[in-house]
Amino acid sequence: MNKKYYIIPIFVPHKGCPHDCIFCNQKRITGIEKDITYGEVVQTIDDYLKTINRENSYIEVSFFGGSFTGIPMDYQNELMQAAKEAYISGKIDGIRLSTRPDYINPYILDNLVKYNVGVIELGVQSMDDEVLRLSERGHSPEDVINASRLIKKYNIKLGLQMMLGLPGDSEEKDLYTANEIIKLKPDFVRIYPALVIRDTYMEYMYKGGLYKPLSIDEAVEISKKLYIEFISENIKVIRIGLQPTEEINTGRDVISGPFHPAFRELVESTILNDMIGFVINKHFINSEKLEISVNPYDISKLYANGKRIFYNKMKCYMSINIKIRQDYNCKKGTIALDDGEKQIMMSTNEYVNIVKKRRNFKENIEL
Image (cartoon, rainbow, N blue to C red; front, side, top):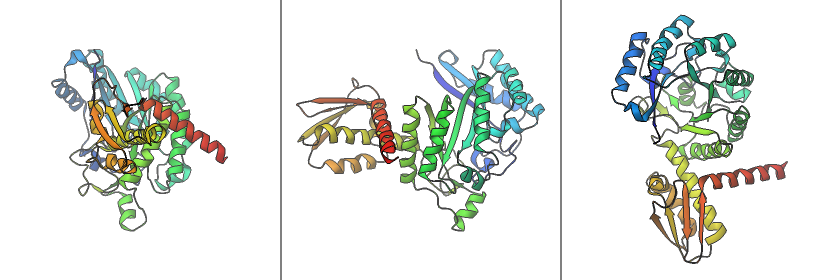
């Protein structure tokens, strides 16, 4: 039986950050303003465990927010001690944290190993010098490379986070960042479209006409291409888009930008519908009727955003009588198209690899 994966989040807002990045307001994002104590970490772990079936679960405590390895070492150790005790007692299965690329060195990692930290996520955001400068990140692409290599040397799992749509950014720069991240061979990545959060410098830029955020459609299109880059290299994408919380709502603390409570589903829906279009164009463009089978698990992806993505794609095939059928025999992430004379099946992985090969071929031709 596959175990369910759970994260027990411990937010340490804006602790350890040497810079106020123009897009960031941890207090707004997390809704937490006070310092966290050892006792509160213990209590948070115990509260979460009351709701989890321990026998069929894999549980990690995760220190989010700010830059954990930048806070005073004594305070780091106080918080991690609570997690370590839960780990040693068997209450949890792992400990992870997020931090800045320039707050990683052998001394810091030696200490983290003592507390059984098994996963470190780095906020990369971009590998473009100009984007990092305009965002006031305070670190360089070289810091990302050095920190990533060092973390892997310690046999700690590596996660890298990137952000698209920052000032000075472009689709070309986002794809460059993705490919630089791929070279570092992380265990997983997160993709975040930049949002205009209240009480940040980016809000000032937005209201002053100095910054224009991506639209949802633009962010989905770029995220789709980034997703394909990572998946084709067997790098897991564990999140796309900011997780919706009580604080994160457009018009409340998100002033503007491509926020959607199911952003990942929009991206995966676009890929799924593009895949259907690809198969139709190659094999069924002259068919009069067509039955498309999908696993019921995938139907919400196919029809995401009120079926808008699906209908926009199907407008290209008005001459074909298309019927969608839910079929449990169709594997998740796979489609089966049948016009009565021939049947073609394709998985998302197959499609992603085709797109990647075509993109590389096009780039080589242009060179």
